[in-house]
Structure formats: C-alpha cells, structure tokens
Amino acid sequence: MPGFRPTAWLRPLLTLAAIAGVLSLAACGGGNGAPSQNNAVSTPLSVLPATASVYSGTPVTLTVSGGTPPYSAFSADQSILPVQQNVSGNSITIVPNQVTADTEVDVTIRDSKGVSATAALTVKAALLINSLTLKADNFSDQCPSSAINSTTPTDTNGSTWICSGQTGSLAVRLQNGPAGGLAGQYVRFDIVQGDFQIFTEGPGQPNAFARCYIVPTDQNGNAVARILANPSAPQQIVIVQASVLGTTPPPTSTPVCDPSEVPTTGNFVRGLFVIQQVGQLSVVPTTVTITGPDTQTCSAGVVSTFYIFGGTPPYTIRNTFPQALIVAPTLVAASGGGFNVTTNGACVNPATISIADAAGHQTTVTLINQVGTTPPNTVTNKNPIVIGPTPIPTLTCGASTNIFVSGGGTSSQQGNSPPVITPATQFLISTDRPDILQVNPTSVGPLTAVQLTRLTGSNVDASASANATVHLNIFDGNQSQTFSVTVTDTCP
Image (cartoon, rainbow, N blue to C red; front, side, top):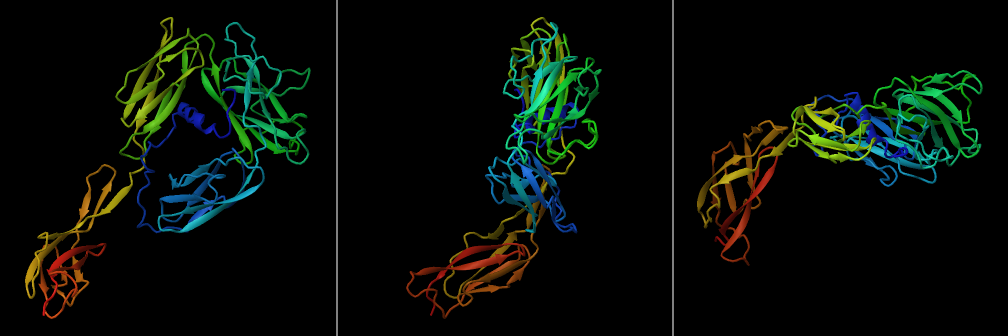
C-alpha cells in the first residue's frame, strides 16, 4: 500500500473517521432514513455548486437544498460522472472517471415531486499521478525496517507506516502539466490529521517545521517534502493531502502556508499512513463507532479495518461477539497487517475484540454498532378493495344479487413500527355496460349492500355463448379495482 489512488482514498477514510468516534454509516439496504416531508412547505430546489470544474479521480460534493426530499440524482454521462441514484440526506459525493480532454457533464437532482435542478460540471484530466507515496528512513534498530531501496521519490515503492521519531519523505508527481510544463508547478502539502511535521529550513539552517508547505516540482514533475513523525506520537493514523496550485508562487516570501485552510476544490490526492509506536503491541484505531441509518436500525455490512503494530508477530484475533460481528482474518502474520470487522445488523455497545501476539502480550479494541438519529422512512401502501360474495353469482335476465364492498384505503408503516391502517370510508361503483348491469346505489360506505341487476332488452354480444362478462369498477378515492360479473348474454 505505497499510496492511495484518488478513487480509493475515500475507503480508508472510514477508518480515519472511526478514530475520532464520529463514523456514521448506513447499513447496506437500510435506506436513507430521511423522514417524509411531503406535507411540508418547501423552498425552491437548488444544487450547489451549480457550475464547477472538477478533476478525474478527485471527489466533488454536491449539496442539495429545498424542494421535497428524498432526492434522486442522474448523470448525463454515467461513464464519466458515475452517481448513485438515491441521494442520502442532502449531499452526494462523486468521483469523476478519467478523461483525455475537458468534458462537460450535467448532473440532475430531482425531488420526490419531480422538480429538477442541474449542476453543470466540467471534468478535467487529473494533474497528479494517482498516488501519494511515503518513504521512511531506516535509522533505528528499534524500528522494524520500513525503508524502500529506491532513489526515485514517486515510484510505486513506498511504506504504509513510519515509526514515532522517524524521518522520511512524501512525494507526488505531476502529469498532464498545465501551461508551463512539468517543472516549476507549485504543490501544497497539508498534514490534515496526525503527528507529522514537515521540514521547512533551508540548507545549513537549524531545523524548522510546519504542517503546511508549498513545494515546486522539478523537471520530472516530482514534488517532495521531508517529514518527521513526532518522537512522542502515540499509535495513530495520519492523513496527508497534496494539492496542485499551478505556477503562482507562494503569497509570501516563505513557502509555509496556513494549515487552517486545507483546499477542498481543485485537483488533490490524499494518502493515509500509520505512525507506529516503537516496541509496544498496539492497534489502530482503538475504537470504532458506527451509526445505523435510522433510529430503529443498526448497520449491516459495514466494514472497519484495524491495523496491528509492535509486539511479536504473528497475532491472533479473537471475536467475542460472533453473533454480531464477522472478523477476518483471525491470524495476522506481520506488523502493520490488519483485520476487518463487518457488522451484521445486531446492535452492540460495545463489542470487544482481543488481540494477542506470539509472546502472549494482549490488547483489545472495541466496536460500537448503534442506531442512528434520523427517524426511518414512512412507507405507504394501498390496501386491496374486497367484495363479497366471491365469485359474484351469475345473473340471468332480470335477476338481482347483493354484494358488499370493504377494504381499500392505505397502510402506513414507519420502520419496524406496527402499521397504521386507514380504511376507505366511501366507494364509487360503476360498470362498463350500464345498459346490461344496473348498480344501485352507486355510492356506498363499507359493508353496505349494493344491488346488481341484469337488465332485459339488451345483449352483451350476440355472437357470444350463453353467458358473457361485464365489468364492475370500484373506486375508493385513491385507487380503482375492476371485478368481473357473469351475466346471461342475450335478454330479449
């Protein structure tokens, strides 16, 4: 795992967010949990940004407001801008695919009433090679070797981790350089989270550090920043971002930039790396909290990854909640390896997973799978209209029979709560052949007798057999159903 392709770094961010205990994911198939707002007064539907330039492999988030949720999303070119049709909440994140030239693609957002709003996006070719590599220096016997014997800073060889107190380098490479070529383009490195520092001193000067640093590319398009993992850093995951700024020099005489303003637009890549605390058996993250899609449901199918460091490999993982979690693999061979924990819909708060090394040292991690904060969707279905008796007796010339109508209306259910049934209170009854079949009365309440009479003096179909069929239509104010009535075909 030398670095992360832009299309892949979103997945490891789930683990990063878990460290802060703020991971909130919906269970597979759980729906978006948005409450019904069909009766609410809505503002006009809008989507922001309405126009934007986006880069292949770099995520872009569209924010939807107004209208009547839930929303649906549609891409004019799914091969370039693939979108999920169902929008969860009021935002949608899209990762554009590769293009060779600027390509305009519209994304249309539609609310539940069919009102639409459009974002006009121009997809541009990515400027950065799709990785951000870490190369740690191998300087201590106490730190297992993570050095890669390579003189090229941006090749595919790299490390996924670095020891506390260790130095190394971060690098990206420009491709498809903007006007001016590959050299002299400025790349901004940001330590988004974690105990990394970037060396900023010039040659022969005392060490100086920052968390944001601007570096020009060389003739090959490489941008390299030297880094230090803080000596006192505990076990943790670090996230680093590299952003293309173009040919504009830093705004001040120093390339140190404001770390509070990490770019969220333009072309950037992110890498996720681990700081290993030397000598100790430890796991990152130590706790993961997963939130279900609504207030009645815990997540299912959500995967969290834990990484083991230190101690004496191999490591054995024991799942103490097999009824609620799936753990795989249960044996990790080397430091820096990981195991996955998958939820199955059961709520746990918390579940403890134990890890032991070959020397008998043990540690634990916890996972919380809890219900969400959004009420579940309300699903409304139509109840079938029922008549009796069934089948309706065959009506001969001049004969009558009574039927009774019931059912209809709707059934509404919110999540797994008991359904609320609203039966129909009135039925309108008609026939496609009023000259053949008389209905009396034509408007009734539930279980009120309705008389059907085969009138004389009319034929259904002179070429038919002894009996023929006419149709009875029953409307409950929300839906219509049709029933067949067998009658004598010919009545002089």
